[in-house]
Length: 238
Ligand code: UDP
Image (cartoon, rainbow, N blue to C red; front, side):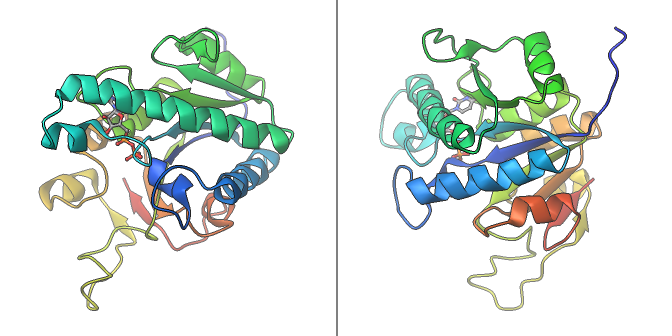
C-alpha cells in the first residue's frame, strides 16, 4: 500500500478494574488521570499508542450469566460498560493535550466513531491516541481477545497487558510466599500451564501473529513508561 512504517506502535490493554483505583466499583477519577499522564509520557517519547479498555469495573456478562442472566445479553451490557470507560479515558487524555479518538465496535455514532480498520490506522499515523471501545463487538469474547485482535490489525510491535500484579507468577503471590515471577514465558507455557494471564483465544491470536505480550502492574504510577523503556518488573510472553 506504500505505507511508510515510521514510529513504533503499542497497544495498551487497560482492564476495567485498573480504573477502580482503591475503590471496588466504577471509576476513580485520580486513577484515570494518572493513567492518562502515563500514556501521555509514552506518546511524547515517540510511540504511537492505542488502547483497549475493559468493563469489568461496571459489568461482566459471565458473572451475570452465573446468576441466571442470558449470557449474550449480559455480554452486550458488558461491552457498553467498556464504552463508558472509553469516554472517561478519552476525557482524561484530552486534558493531557493528546488528540484522541474513540472507535467503537458497536456503532454509537453520536459519541464514538465506528471502528473501521483503515481509518484507525490513519488516526495512529497522525499521532492520535485511539481508544477501542466495545471489545470485539461480539458476545462470548473478552476485551483481552479484543486487545490481541486490534493489536494484530494495527500491526503493533507489542501488546501491553496492564494488571494489578507486576507480572505472571508461578502461584498466587498473595497466598503463596514461594511464588516467583517469570521473566519470560512462551505462549505455549501460558496455554499448557493454564497460567491465568489472558484467555486462550487472546494468547492464540498473539501467538499466530508473533505479537509479544508484556504483563505489568498498571496500578503502579509511571509503570507504563518504565516498561516501554524496558525497565522491569514485568513478564514477557513470546
Ligand atoms: N465483552 C464481550 N465481547 C468482547 C469484549 C467484552 O462480550 O469482545 C463483554 C463481556 O461480558 C465482558 C465485559 O464485556 O465480561 C467486560 O469486558 P472484560 O471482562 O474483558 O473487561 P476487563 O476484565 O478487562 O475489565
